[in-house]
Figure 1: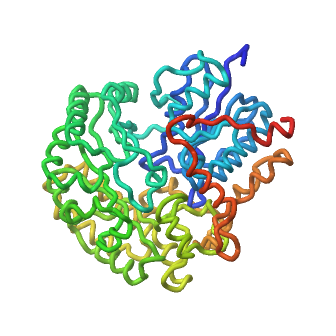
Figure 2: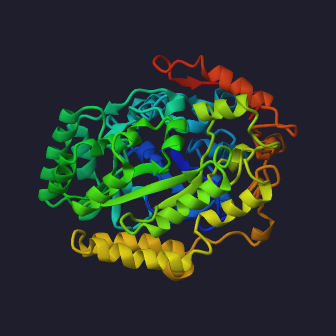
Length: 525
């Protein structure tokens, strides 16, 4: 393709906010960075790029943003597939010749639907973007090495994001990475260093690996040597990382990360119930008693954060309330950084289990796989479980219990944690107890129709994003219909079944990026 001017490219991290918040979440950590890594695949001085995160800034509904585009690049989690279709409709209406590229979990799990929607439905990794750029624009438009374009981000927070590996060496039943079945890969030290040196200085680093610890102790220690030298050079203030439970098998690991500048770790606790951990196939959390791992980390001066999940289709309300009561009453562990319902993501063992056991509710929507909307038939009464889900994100009704926990936690660890670490952990607890005080006017607000939210996928309204923000071509109005998981009887939707069957045959090695002719061509667009 011969160009007489610089191509105009829009890259969007597509997102549906479960709070129906129209303003985004600029204060949330971590932020999504996929759009910034994708931007790094383009030659910096040859292409005009706008990178936009709907998670950070809210839905992109500005009509002018889609005008005169040469390429739209989309990424997002599986639940964002419909949102990617919306954005495609906007771009093709305002820029009929725009090439639409889409990738990420949503595309990999829905290969047939993606091939029918996007010009390039990418089954592979981020490096495939370079091949697409060469195919569409030419060799000159592609960068030799992909480094995230933090200069295109509009956030000014204290954290920068670096990746040292991809995928995971464990196979939790609910995890999207298990569905993809790809092998854990550590990055070359030179590439890790290049990311750090390319990022803004004097901030904190959050290593966004799915498993920073990995499957090789020698590689882990070598990575720490590099990080320690960069930290001592003064490139960043300190760092945080995500590790799996087996990291705590050897408590000398805590001394090693602290000596390298680590301020805190995040680990997927998910539940303290051993039977539930086995149900999740989360064997790495059975290596060391989880409470012992948490306490040891905090006593060693390494802040510990975690998430907690509940599965009403396999846990009773009483069991879930008892676990919450234990955690809010146990001052030797922090409160969770987030709470959610277990999500039966497409292609995961948990999804297959829910289908086989007819657990999905009728008229279940892909858009509702957000961790706060009930997707499966609960063991207890539906109205009682939906009320539990409504209160879950902020532990409504437990303010004084949380405040009492904060006092006990401070007394327990005030000598082992720095003031900065303690403030961070207590702020997280206070966010649950006093959200309006902690966030002021920047608190994510639900829509005016909050009272209409049922937290049950069968009856949960789609929300305003399914109504086009401006006039779109008639042939694209179908892009605003929801992708269904089940029909009105609770049977798996035929389109979903077709996609999941097709994804089994998609090669994960050769030809991972696929160029397809979509409906736009047939329509003469």
